[in-house]
Image (cartoon, rainbow, N blue to C red):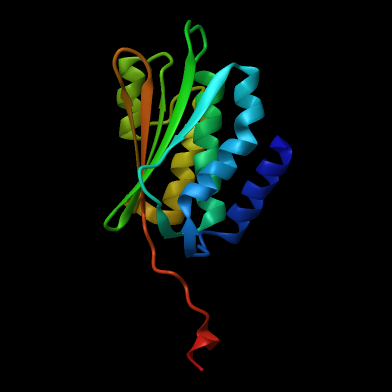
Length: 178
């Protein structure tokens, strides 16, 4: 499965940053991602929770956004709870405001060290944070400087990852003007 995902990423990179923008039910997309990652989370006794306060439909490239979300959630499953005692909970929230989609991936695991947190938010590449570096590169390739990822420690424990993605206009077929 991991090898297939990597091959998909290589194919996408070779195609460049062409976005296939369509109207997508983002809630349904996140639910599919979490269903696919549930076995990985269950192996580590992590509860995956999707919270959405209203339906979110957005004009996005489903495949590329799914890769970004999947990478962030997998990272949280694999690394957020190392050495952490207590219930393991990973919550994903999706909302839409004006021309941006806001995705929050929050865990109740351990904090990121303050110096690393600062470096992450400044966009510096950090040793052993390859997944985050990949997400950043991918976001830049797809959206330029318009996409933002931000990390914060939350009390009493855990980290929130905020992902802001610009919404695009749905692409129309050139022949659809008949």
